[in-house]
Image 1 (cartoon, helix red, strand yellow):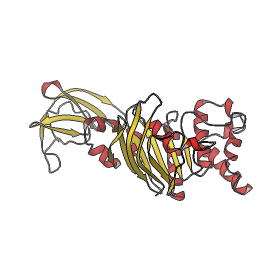
Image 2 (cartoon, helix red, strand yellow):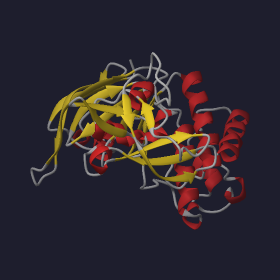
Image 3 (cartoon, helix red, strand yellow):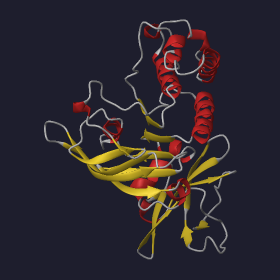
Image 4 (cartoon, helix red, strand yellow):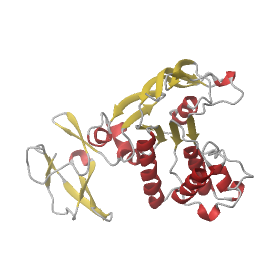
Length: 310
């Protein structure tokens, strides 16, 4: 086990409680995503896990060792835990190359150079390698910050909204590289994001956080197809909610059939409203009883559809 979190709580000096009685474990080679609305305490939780803020109660253990209260340290934090957030903790007067390389003094010179060049390539920073970090863009600083965190070779990597400045190409490239490193090094990763769809392709487990508490734990498949409620399900994409015989039925826009079968047997009458082309599919919007709207995905427009089965 890399990280063990036992009943931790945190409040600001104003006595406003941010989160309460949170517990979970992070295993070697595992990626956990923490999802929830803005203001629920996700970023503050990461700072506490990184040993940067003092807890009100509870304990955090890194590979069996209790995390020391930051008040007892000259420099808060733990050498085996790296936090990447929007603060970009870089040395402004070192180049991008030097910011990475300076974390690799534990390696022989040849390996140090090879790993530095690898990180510059993966994070697409070669063109700014010789620029001081204060002179590169915000997106480049974010990528450099993550590259530096990986250069430290931490046992636990904490990522706070790490992809907000990434395009689709970079997201896929860096995501695949990080997943590979996680498997090779058997390190643990915790990703905080408000974008649940992003977490589906990343995570081994997903924790839902609301009003300072972990409310549910899912696998990616469960989060998408079997959310416990509408509020949580909508973090992972469009979700329909209808009532059949007084019971709420939640289903994704792909989870329906135009003919009854063993998987889809509950009949729903629909009135076509409009259809929008989204590249690989059409999003078809319908009205059902009492004017409620649902959306169904398909390869073609469903303008002639009058009945579906869910």
